[in-house]
Length: 148
Image (cartoon, rainbow, N blue to C red):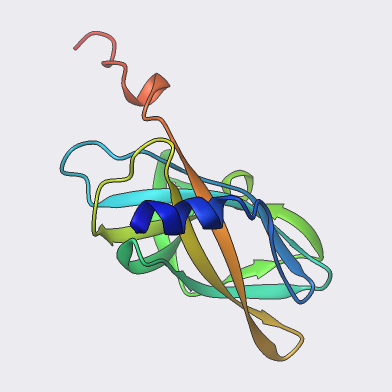
């Protein structure tokens, strides 16, 4: 049942609500015992808007985080909202991402994660449904550090 639900959602591709759309949403598969995962996406809005939060049935809570250089170190901080410009914004490239916290099951490559984004647009709140593809846990994350 769960896989069918995810498969049906995955077929939708980009998601739209009002003047807002989501595309290129993805998360990396999780390692054994990992109970959090990051989601990146591109959100496009016809007007200046604000991302107020999000949820997913695959986790207990959804958090929005910023990544910024601070004193020579990269720091991650939870934020209450994310201002969205008119046009497209890549959360990954802008230093923001969504965190799935308290995963109910591991994320496996090839599956998909349903998301509901709460966006304030022109004085009203709209819900945008989206789907993040789960990509393999590979590349730099799997390589041991040099000199270890």
